[in-house]
Amino acid sequence: MTIRCLAVLTALCLNNQVCLAGEQTKQENTTRKAKVHHLSPIAPKASEAFKRQNDDLKKLMLQLYQCNQKDLLKSTKVSAEELVQWVFEGPFGWKFEAIRRMQSVDALSLSFNEQYQGDRILPLITGLHTMLVSAYGGENEFRFTKTISPKHLYDAAHNIEMTRFKLINPSNDVHHFNANCTSEQINEIETTFTNIIKRTNQYVQSIDHAGSMRESIVSVDYSSADFIKMPH
Image 1 (cartoon, rainbow, N blue to C red):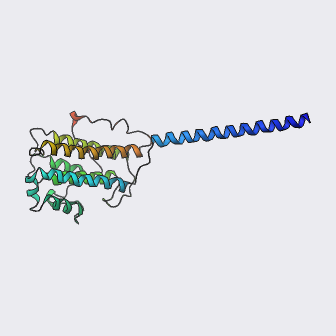
Image 2: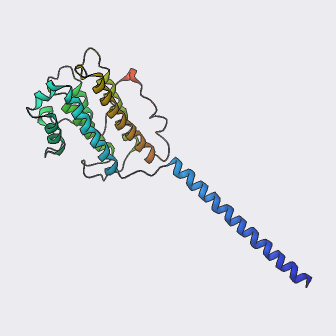
Image 3: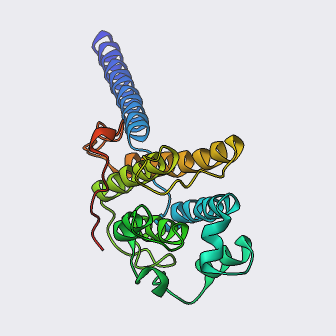
C-alpha cells in the first residue's frame, strides 16, 4: 500500500513538473515572439506603402506650383491641378521630353541646375517619383515585383532629405523655389517632405531585419550635400 502511494505521488509530481516546464516554455516562446515582433514590424506590401508616398508627391507638386506660377507657365496654360493629374495619370511613363526623359537622381539634379531654364518642379517631382518606385522594388508605380533593398530605400530617404534641404534652404547660386512662397506655404511643403522621409525610413526599418541600416537613417550630413546615385 505504501509503495503504491509513493508511486502515485511520484507520478503526480512528475506530471506537475512536465506541466510547469511546458507552461514555462510556452511563456518563453510568447515573450520571444513579442520581442521579434517589436524589433521587426511587419512591412505592408510595397504597392500599399508606395500609394501613400504617391499621394504625398501629388500634394507636394501642387503645393510647389501654387507659389511658383512662373514654373507652371513654362509647362502649360492649364491649372496646377490639371497639370498634376496629367503628369501622374498620363500615358507617358514618367519620360517627359521637356526634361530630356530624365528620371531619378538625374532629374533631381536638373531641377537644381543653375543653367536649366525650364520648369524646375516637373523634374523635381519626376525624380522623386521614379527614384521611390525603384527603391520600393517597382517596375512602375503599379507593379512591384523586385526584391527590396534596405540600402536603396535608405539612399532614397537621404536624397529626399537633401532635396528638402536644397529647396527650403537654397544657396545663392540655385533657383529659389520658395522665393514667392508664404511662411505658411513653406511650412506645408516641409511637412509633406517630412511625411515622405519618415514613411521611407519606417519602411526601411520594417524590412531591415538584420538592423544594418538603423544607425544610418538617424541623420544626414549636410556638409557633403549631394545626391546618392540610385540604380535604375
